[in-house]
Amino acid sequence: MGDPNEPLDHDGEFTRGSGSSLPEQSEDSQVDHGITTPWAFPIFAFVLSLVTSSIGVIVASALSGSKLAASSTTLTEPLLLGSLGGLWVVFFGASLVASHRWGTGKISHDLGIAIKASDLLVGFVVGVAAQLILVPAIYLAYQFLTGSSTTALSAPAQKLVNSGGGGASEVLVGALIVVGAPIVEEIFFRGLTQRSFQYATRRMTARVSKLISLLGSSLIFTIAHFEGLQSFGLFGVALVLGYLAMKNRRLGTSMVAHASFNLVSFVALLHH
Image (cartoon, rainbow, N blue to C red):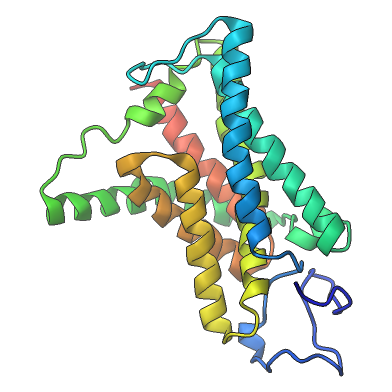
């Protein structure tokens, strides 16, 4: 764990005081972390979230009488709410705890939760391009290299969309996927996790630190979704989102890109 007295600049990044022992870095490789969270903390929170998500599903199933079979093509709304609720309460709760324990106590400052007008256009374009160009390209390459079929790629997403029974139900599912997930997941994965990894690797060269942080947070993001073959595409998208957050030193662009990526998928699957 680092020195909590290291000064922060207005973007929530660490600056070098006269007594700092951090290695000198060029201006274009400035570190992007704004919090001194130990790298193990977000990993612990991630594992805990899997437990709370499972508990949420069990509770939702008991209260609603819903049952979930592995072969089911429908994920009922109560089970979806239980699963996401269990994840998100830990994701956001851990981010708050980290901010108060290892940051300034202002989560928006510590994790770069800010959005600018330019983020709306850039994020939308990047998210749509990732869904329509990047992901198909990844699976075409996979199919070419392995000779495997990718016809089952939409199955997990289709199960999620099928949870909406129409009308208000579809609105609820859409809100969870297009609004809730991008906000909470970007705060946890690109805000807390990625910045924590950058702080943990701060004594490495800037490029190595950023690479490790980007790959590490993207891998955990991919594992969190448990999508099998879809993991290749998710990992590629996670790298893009992580790069946006790292480059802009705020989460606005990655949140909008994440939202537009999910929106394209949700709308397409509704009309499948």
